[in-house]
Image 1 (cartoon, one colour):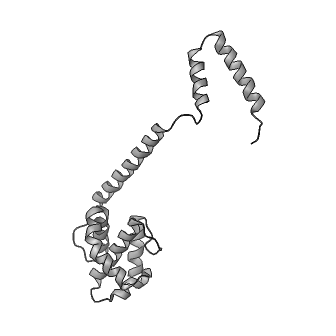
Image 2 (cartoon, rainbow, N blue to C red):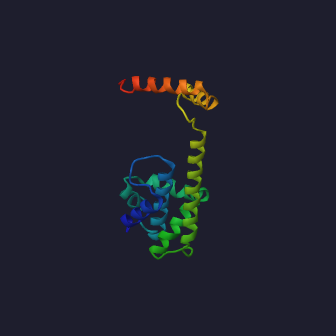
Length: 165
């Protein structure tokens, strides 16, 4: 049963709670695991609960004490908890997949918006000279100077295209 819960948490939250790591997402997921096991098997010893994750009883105590705070600030934990408890037959609330999907989509939208903003803020060129040359070509379009600049740039390119640094 414990391994099944570990796999469900890994699948739902996308984190491996068996790895040695102090990242917030993994700590919260471990606390969720401890909470579900303790709720499902109240007479199981704390050391027995901790052993599949190579932790000790103190880690379980600490995680159980802090789990309500983790759940308060990470609503996905509550949804995953309800899904797992529903699957093992100890549901606290009816399962609501649309809520989980909505949270996932909102996170995806936020990530995409952040990525788009970073792309918009990224300079188009790495070098200032490239931008200056582009502006010069735009400003002189349709003139003899434009043709001369283009001819020289093409010559410069053909002379230097095979240089290896």
